[in-house]
Image 1 (cartoon, rainbow, N blue to C red):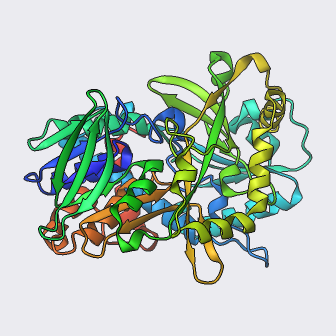
Image 2 (image 1 turned 90 degrees about the vertical axis):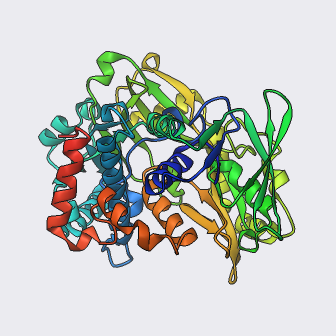
Image 3 (image 1 turned 30 degrees about the vertical axis):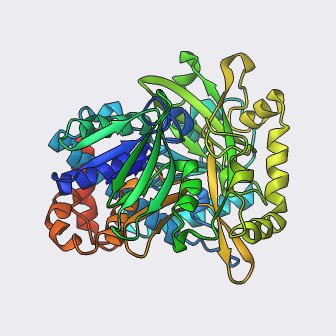
Length: 484
């Protein structure tokens, strides 16, 4: 098996496959000189451990004032699945110290103004009607909010404000998690990791059914010719080009819209000590989901910091360390109509991105002061975040559609699969990997079921329907991952 890209998705797929079938031979190819340097790296990733406690864009308001919570339930179940597998990996020695990659950090949602306060109250009531979210708290009392988020309340004079809080939230360093999984993988027989190796060609041998993977060893300017029964393209923004290179029918018509990002980062210990939570706000009217502002306590490579943002931007690169020709080179007769259609119908998104690109440092600090009214410029610096590529796909009705999630595209003969898209991909990586196994290895799934139930006790069941199961898996994860 060939896994392309040494990020959280390839690491998860590889580790899961190797635990299920230790006899598998796996080659993992990474274009850069280190594992997890692109979107999985903690500085490029929000690290929220997306569970829908605080992300208001997962619970849109309906016209009648009620709140749609279906996506929130799904995201929560996916993240609980991730925590279960990570717990099993810690028990089995696949991962070592869980505090290297996951910490308990409360998740809060915060709003101001009567309309948004009404929405937050309706959201709280809709979510807490199910046991999945029973631990959530709500308050519109200023004294309580000062206890929950003192840094954000200092100097605040809003007339009406409210917040929800869950102490079951987490901060995840997906870079360290990825490196931990890969470190274990390369110690297993039959697994090889190739850094500084760029996969640039994929061809199917019609006679043998094998994939011919052509790889350039960038450190020695030499090509490798690898043959594989199965290929997973988990190369982040680089996946689109390789999917097109594979020439599978299922991959036709896909395009990508790249979005860059920046964080305002604070490492002043006196300021960091005042904010031990993650707080998500509400995206402004007419802005895309990626614009949701949040102020997060982060643990990045063992360092404690605060991050605010992300501020979006536009770049034609599909990877942070990619080429400015990535976007124009991705255009083809297959995806030109979907790309043009999406561009014409998403002019507000283009306007938003142009506005973000032209923001000055002072304007970014003013945005921060909506969260931290007395933020001082000397405490904050601007740092580049990761590059995201939103999926554009064909649509019978409109010609093309812009997606803000993740999507697996697999060949009809199950020999190749690719992952496209962005958030909440890292947090839901285990559920994505399980979907990939079900899609690409249907004949092997019955034999893998007993092991999957050991690794993920809730596998095949819906936590939203089973209170006792939910309590059991959460208690197990909190104990093993040391989140109590």
